[in-house]
Length: 380
Ligand code: SF4
Image 1: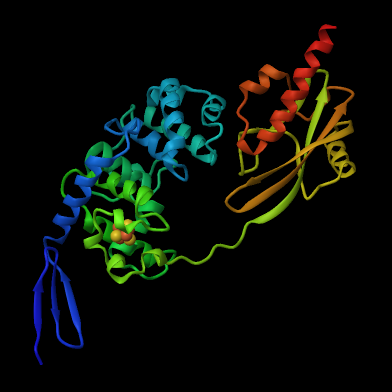
Image 2 (image 1 turned 120 degrees about the horizontal axis):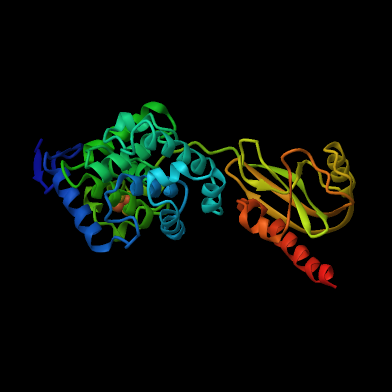
């Protein structure tokens, strides 16, 4: 039987009529890294955090970029750094102000952890971020991805930063065809990601992988535009869009919810949430599994709020990762300004100054409209 051996730039292929064996050459990674970095240098988006190696700025950008698109983050990042220009400024800030600066970005636990982490770095670490992955991971709100990103971009350490985009790129490049939710497969992806890395330009390489995942190696892949397709296992096998393999998530639960806009003489009632979801954000009173005004009034009464239903002002929907709120916005009129401790009767100016989550935007608009109408009456 005749055996053929081919030497490709990045592989050695040995074949006979029945079998093909392909080995990556030792220089496979060099070619791949070069191709990716050259592409990155040519096409990278001019995002405001690109080009900085300040650990504080890198850390803020990486926390903001979790679960959020770069285009959305840009404006927030610039304003945040203007408002809190150093880790000391962030540590000294009021949590309310930090949440206000985060308003609209979602996943507010990130903002609360950012503040906690700043307090540790500013205090115990005298303002110096550790240039070490393990030490970074001990800080509040810093997981494997953020530690990898800060260590590589700010300190040039050769360590991967595997977020959802990079996980997809690595699974496809290296042909990982097992469920990435399995811990051993997760570890394999992390290991493969590290194997792919060059000895220098580590921060740029990680950002290039993220850029590739965000713009080319998307869930529906654009392999024809990919600078590393000749190194890609999934491209060769033609199954890119089937990777990474993931178990289907359970669908989100839909929860009907009454939102009570309780007005009293130019003010509306708000409370600061203590629940884990939207913790620390200011919200209108809301009641799960309530969709009638009578039931909402009963729930208000339980809180010692005497209020009369006036009208339903609209509906709104907000999708979280695990649940969906189907909200009915109901207006009430309270006879007195009695409210539970810690709740707040807010006028228009105070309402604008407090951090309210995106989930309450429709209710906020309705409240602002109503409060704006109240001002001329007062002056009359
Ligand atoms: Fe992703 Fe396709 Fe590029 Fe492979 S060739 S890395 S699947 S875009």
